[in-house]
Image (tube, rainbow, N blue to C red; front, top):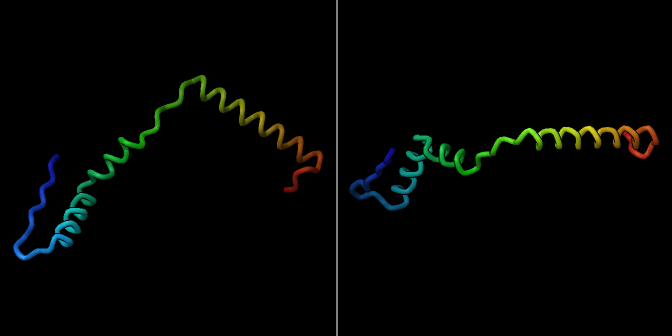
Length: 73
């Protein structure tokens, strides 16, 4: 999908750039490019399991410290 912006007669380069940027934002090209660039890969089953086990271990440690009075609510 090509987007073309031509300079109008007696138009400054600043306003041309502003008009081009506005058309890019309106077309959604920039959003699609950012989605591709910053795409997160899905986690594997093993990584999900390890993360869940780590969260559970941290929760247990937190509760233990809370019972001992080392952490206030």
